[in-house]
Image (cartoon, rainbow, N blue to C red; front, side):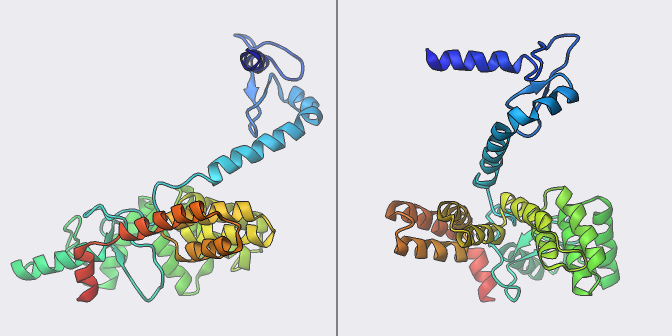
Length: 303
């Protein structure tokens, strides 16, 4: 009963301006506090006047809402699934080991297993090289490939924007790279958010900005970027926030992140993480890694 009465009281408060008490109706439109959504106001004036009374509850609830989003397990890693075999694409572990390729014709990222199978099909049928997904003929020159890429850029494809940004970055054109990454990040591209976090942390082509660094790092982690998530955990550990660090590393381990499961192993040895929690994270990590394997991919790696 008490809980029901409190809920009813809360609902009544939401129907009135938290400052002056004016009820919402046809003539009065109440707007939520954008930060916490706990109260409503009839005007900006009322919101400002009420701030001194509301700010503590507002900041507390805002932090809770932020953590609800930040610590939500992503459905998949930022690299996603291969659009042909529908298996998760392995998380990149080294720039020297390429396990997938983005095709400029359709911007699809294809796993090596499907690429290898397509090559064998073309050889057997004596077909010219083509995209495994859309069957567009493989570009014969760099100029033709660049033309296809720029068409995808004009379509604001986030994967292409990120890739073109990486190309500009590798040639030393950091300012243009940043512009491409910014556009890609606006569409939620986690890889671009991660690159932007590095840019603002190191001051590459921009002024160092810790707020922007944290924003882009958190957005990358929310988008399923395993290393961004691992780095957030490492930062929390350095602050002495072991519980928060463990939460980040468990999420990263569930995505198949090697450094995260190693960090959790260390926490388990120290008694910070329980045997049950570490066992659950380890099984999830093994499951995530195992889900990326297939006979086709093994054949491609052996070829």
